[in-house]
Amino acid sequence: MARPHRRDMSRPELLFPLFAGLETLEGVGPKTAQAFEALAVARPKDLLYLLPYAGTDRRRRDTVQGAAFPTTVTVEVTIGAHFPARRKGGPTRIMVRDAMLEWTVVYFHAKGDYLQKLLPTGQRRLLSGKVETFDGVAQMVHPDHVLRPEEAAELPPYEPVYPLTSGITQKQIQKAAQSALARAPVLPEWIDPALKAREAWPDWHAAVTSAHAPDDAAALAATHPARARLAYDEFFAHQLTLSLARQSMRRGKGIASHATGALQDKVLKSLPYAPTAAQSRAIRDIAADMATPLRMNRLLQGDVGAGKTLVAFLALLVAVEARGQGVMMAPTEILARQHFEGLERLAAAAGVRLGILTGRDKGADRAAKLADLVAGRIQILVGTHAVFQKDVEFADLRLAVVDEQHRFGVAQRMELGAKGQAADVLVMTATPIPRSLALASYGDMDVSVLDEKPAGRKPIKTALVAVERMDEVVGHLPARWPRASRPIGSAPWSRSPRWSTWPRRSSVSSRCARPWAMGRWGWCMARCRPPRRTPRWRVSSRGKPRCWWQQR
Image (cartoon, rainbow, N blue to C red):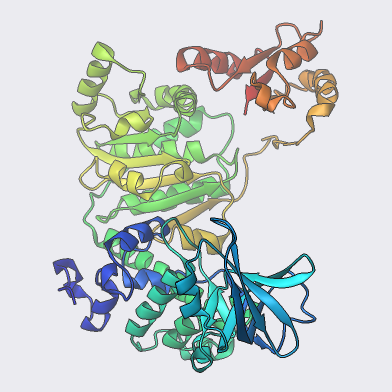
């Protein structure tokens, strides 16, 4: 067996066989091992968790008579006469007889001597495969299994069916899975005994063995004790990993960012409203985290309109007051520019310099921004993925804010935090996340929830309307405009004849070309490049047009 890699040395020696090369399994060569990569199987331990998704009933019958054709039948027969193919590539027919009926077994492109050896006339064989009728006669084409009567025990009553990929057959994957199972050790139990007893879960070894040997269709359900146990193991391991990651993050050395609150007070006094209790609570939690010498890693969750951006900006001011810098990154340029334009007034009230960096910045303009950033003259930066680039350096980055976490990923979030030697990280998301799911997905983070909206904030209503009712949608718009609302429509139009049932842009345009709508609606399409798209959106944010159609 292959010697374990150096990085495997931290594993118990008991697990080494499961982390060996895939070629060490029975029936797996280099070519097959390469094919397994398409199934995300690289080592024997991966096969343990590549579970069957279906099964085939292989229980024995005395005869095919009375079966509901087409169906899979397993039956012992006596082999009769062979009738070779009359033409090249034609069917070779072999007569067989079970306890009550004579029928045929059919092979294509098979040599006669091979079939005589596989199915010798006058001998008994156990056949299992799909039986159907042809010209009123039952026949089995290319049986799945042909066994001697003494080998019948090798065929399970219910055969597991695994997901496949090019270059791998069911027999190969079944053989490899059994070889991997033979290496699975009996491990000490790690689940709470009371929980394990309450759920009637088997031990790990028994669970993984049972999952690969289902008795019937019910054993394939996610609620089956064996599969439920393995699913719990996966979630439990995930939570432990996140807990260790958070523990490591909290042990990680950071820089304490202390603030007097003077800049925050200036911003709050400039607002026409007071922050909600949830916003104040979140700000206190964030400021307390930033004041410790350990790195902050916090999730800020709140619905659209709950005031996450204000909380994030006040947190960035904590970094500025501590003589550091902050960065807020958005997934798209439109969102980044919306943040920048929305924060300009607040930054002016606080007396801090706000900058923006996107992929559109080139040449001297970009170089000037990077110089100001590394010199500390830009105190708060708003940007897109351009912030990840290697030439983007900060004088003293204290806080990194990521908007819409689901658009980035953990690796990018950590890379952004690495821009500062010990930068705190604050992630914002508008996606409603139940607490249990938040702990599962963001278990390495502390969570702050904005569960209320500022007074006077109007709710956003979303409606799904069929294309055939477009005239009703357009006719409804005039009633909305006097209320100072700004409807936004999303339509899947296309010029391609492949999508002929979708409305064309000209069709939507003609419906909106009414006297009361002229000059009061506009377009924002995916094909509009940033120089055209951004001015259109900026016009919308200032009140005209009143209605926007955007391509979905």
